[in-house]
Amino acid sequence: MRFYTQRRMFYCGVDLHARWMYLCILSHEGEILFHKNLPAGPEPFLKAIAPFRDGIVVGAECIFTWYWLADLCEREGIEFVLGHALYMRAIHGAKVKNDKVDSQKIAALLRGGTFPMAFVYPREMRATRDLLRRRTHLVRRRADLLAHIQNTNSQYNLPEFGQKIATPGHRTGIADAFPEPAVRRSIAIDVELIDHLDLMLERRKKEIERTARHHDPQALFLLRTVHGIGATLGLVILYEIQSIDRFERVQDFCSYARLVKCLHESSGKRSGKSWSKIGNVHLKWAFSEAAVLFLRANPEGMKYKKRLERKHGKAKALSILAHRLGRAVYYILKRRKAFDMKIFLAS
Image (cartoon, rainbow, N blue to C red; front, side, top):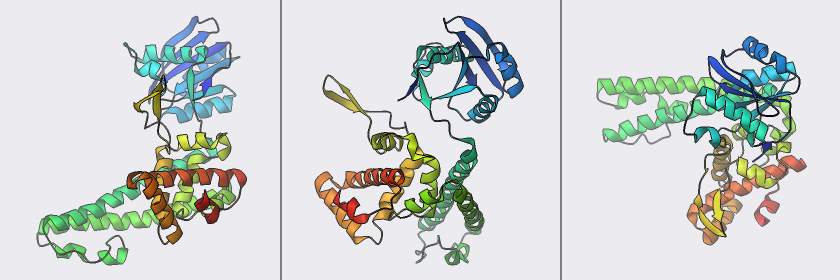
């Protein structure tokens, strides 16, 4: 975990919400110079920090409203630090918690060198990353609709469809297989929504691919040399990483991607695991999917998985494979070299 340790003349803690923000500005000596609740917007913020603008650093917690504040600080030449929400336990674990107290504690963490830093994702790639995340959300809703059709079919103990209903051509007339009129209408709604999502998702995918070519086309090509990583997974990994230079070591990258466990150890004894939600959930999903797809039509990969199963058991084999794919991706992007199956299987 990285902490903000630089010394400044003034420290501004912002407890940010959708419509309001509580500002607390501390001096280098810890004196409260400004402490007030303001409407959330550029003009009130700039007016409040104007007397302290030279030598100020602004810190805010990483919640859904931080985009505009980070962009404003970048445009105005003000140093901005984003706080890691799960690490800021000094706020969440306090006996008394309100906006006024939180803003003062954010400023105090900045001043004391214990402010946990999160990555401020660049503005030029942020919108595309969010569109990719939204696409993933819609794909999961599509899967829920398909599962509802299958479950309804089992609920009425009807014959199996005999073909994959995820394929558009296999869904024609599927609602007519259900005898109840109300059930037919329900299934027809599912089919109509799935057809609409199919069309919309395909359009969004092509748009994102065109945008990705302007950001880092070589990285996207290198990612797709890994067996199991196609267009969608490659885009997700590319935009969630942003730049592999963010990570000095492969261990840092695997930790960020949730590919390793967080152990608690004291006096040489391990006391369980925790903090499993710290890291990037989208990268965790992408590498878990890549581990499964790596085995598809890949006899060498299946042999490699069986070897892992004999050594570590079935439960851990896929997790280890996902971890090693994460390490492979790190070195592929660092060294700008394509994936080599022989080297990977020999590791």
